[in-house]
Image 1 (cartoon, rainbow, N blue to C red):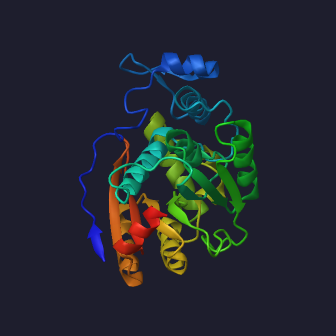
Image 2 (cartoon, rainbow, N blue to C red):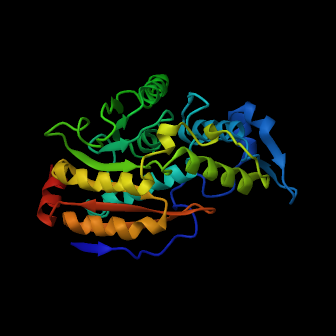
Length: 316
């Protein structure tokens, strides 16, 4: 098993990220006039958005998707997770770079690439960015039927996404790949933003910290839906246990997928993740640092394919 765990951390968003620079609020409010209600002037006299307000964040994201990605309709229940677009886009761009390594350094475009989004969520955000930026096909899985229905509504409402994204309900909450991938189905890459918290109490504490960091105010009982539904946020054992289960199950579908990848938010989880990967003996493990400005994270990726199998996969 070879490993590349020490890439230089980028101080900024990915070079292809459409939101690498400060938001153009004039253009964004023109795209979504509702956003103008949430534009404020900060203590430095600069216009910005009230990021402590979940409705402001949602309207900002709708404007970004409309203005930069051509998505005209992005509606989902307010109780669901509202993802930060720049960070989600960075994951997709880094995955594009990863796929280019086995494609003579050229990013593969179009429908020959199929991605499995583990936990597509109500917002359908990763497929939206992957389809509009690179033309890839997506399978989106989720354990929540309402989230699947919401993602399907977004797909149906945007011509760009039709026939590019297939939603699949995971009926067994203990499974990740089983029940989703067919026996002979081939996936070029999996992407995943695993549930972060181990319990409802843990999630509440995290929400309090988030609200305080954004607004400077300590709120006793902030709404959990500031961050999303419990199924999106909470998994018994948290992110660490989810990834342990994902790693173990990846071994049973190792010929179905070129690259298995996931975000890892907690650096303290890496040691145990590397140990588990060593136990299942993939051919290669790569860690890709991500820095979205106010938060550092990383993608861990692994493949079971030998170099010969990688060449055969690419040629097919």
